[in-house]
Amino acid sequence: MVRETERSSHWPHASSRITRLLGIAALTSAICVALLLASGCSKGSQNAGANGASSQTTDTMGAHMAGPPIDVHIGQSVIDAAPAPWDLSSPQSAVRSYLAWVSYADRIGQSQVATTTMSANEEVRVDSYIQYNLEKSKLIDQKLTSITFGKASTGTTSTLVPTKETWTYSYLSVAEGNAVLAGPHSASYDVTYTVIKQASGAWVVDSVAAKAKGTVN
Image (cartoon, rainbow, N blue to C red; front, side, top):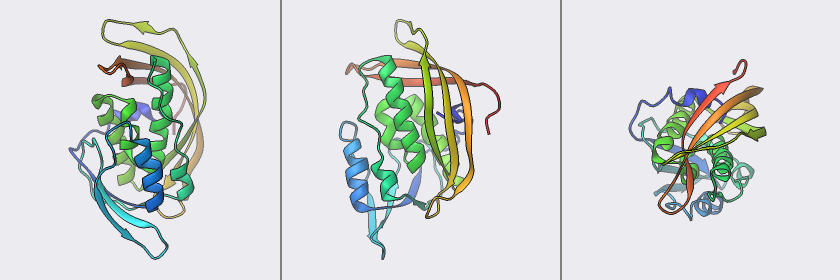
């Protein structure tokens, strides 16, 4: 969610290929398992390195941009720190799941792990923002420190869910070790989520309107 106000500014491309260095076991256990209820793992080539990690080139699932191959080093512990399984049974639980999984996607530079929590429309924005940061050789490590839900407004095709949120976040290098490039910072937002109900009965986030309270770095 951090810098959500910027996500809509970085749409420009049509599909992406990203080279990532991930442990084979980590990729299988954390990302593939996380996607069992979605569309499965993306196909790619793996080459084991001397340190036991693998070099994997994948087509970002659901991506809508094109970008150069980027080496992103993600440690085993980071991959293992996947959120709890998503709960899409109500608009509020869908928002919570969206925030948790988008934060994880931003941290590992993989938008596809969060796509079950959002519509195709929102996927474009999330994917493009992650790609935008990767092209600048950085990741975001963000944590939701508080969230207060306001009264939801139910329409004929969607529900508006207002929140007040505070976050802490840092920008990290994609290089091995993920050195901190900037931060930690803190930010507060007034946010309105448009949440829609799919034919399956699952609620997903379709769009996000965020207004920063104060300065956001």
